[in-house]
Each structure stands twice: as structure tokens, then as C-alpha cells.
Length: 195
Image 1 (cartoon, rainbow, N blue to C red):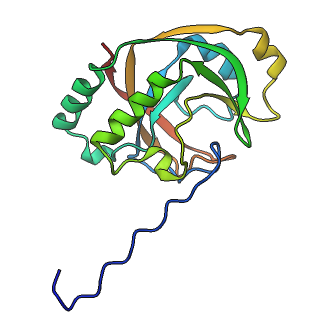
Image 2 (spheres, rainbow, N blue to C red):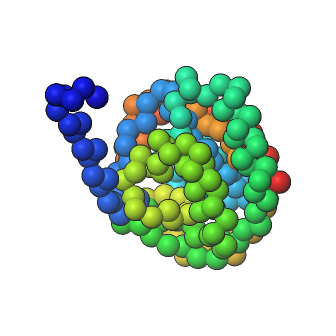
């Protein structure tokens, strides 16, 4: 910086928001790293607001890097990073709620937090949910509160699953991931195995 240049503007403070609060808009080329949970699909499918190409899952990180930045080197780094983490045996025993979203809480939760922290540790420019939340809360979204038949879902619990890979998803159409959003479509573009 030149000695007479004004100091740079401070970075805007990260806004704290309740988990489940409105997320930044998703645009074509955005990516996400998710853990698919096919065992939960029967519990999630009835409450999905739209068909968007995303299976029942837990999010490791969204948004991740724009697809234009994901080259063979990034893929190699992701593969190596995830191979340092073991497959996860998870149980979902209860429904919890964010302000407007019902979700299944995983046990144990720590393994999911560690995966997110590992990716963000390598790519700090990609904070979870664009940095709008102060805490990582592992969850498997069921649907909007008031739309999910919680007694029916509770009757199907506990649900167990073994998670063995991370999926890289790419947003191919749509402009926002918000209640009532339309046209958003995601596609799985890669799998990265866990150890």
C-alpha cells in the first residue's frame, strides 16, 4: 500500500444468525460438499419443497468454491483431506428445530463438525453458509416446521447409517435457495471417499 493511500475499509462484521435463518442466494456454479444419507430418504422425501437434485444429506460445507475454481489440484486436495477422516456410523434419534426448519440431530455430532472444520481450515475463504452462523450445527434437514409430520417421523426413529463418502454438488440452475425458491437444480459431480 502506498504511504498516502487511505487505510483499507474494515471487513464487514460477520452477522450472527440463528441456524436455519435465510442463507445467501445460490447461483449457477456454486458448489456444496455433502454427506448423502440414503437411509433417510423415505423420511425426507414427503417434506421436500421441490425436486432439486439433492438427496437426503448432511452438509459439510455450502457454499464451497465456485466450480470455475475447482481443478484437478483442488480435487486431489479434497480427496487427500477426506481420506484422513474415517467413515462415520451415525444414529438419528430425535427431531430438533431451528427457527423454521425441522431436522434430525446426528449422534455423534463431533465427526461432522471436524469434517467442516478441516475443509474450512484449508479453504478459509469458504465459511459455512457464507459466514452467517456462529456455530456449526450438524443436521439432516427434514423440511419447514409445520409441514413435517413429526409424530410419523419420530415413529421411524432411531435411524442408523454409515457414511463413507463426501459428494461434491454443483448448482446448475436457479438463483436462490430460499422458501418458495424455484428452478434451482443441483447435480453430483464427484465422490470423495472417507477412510
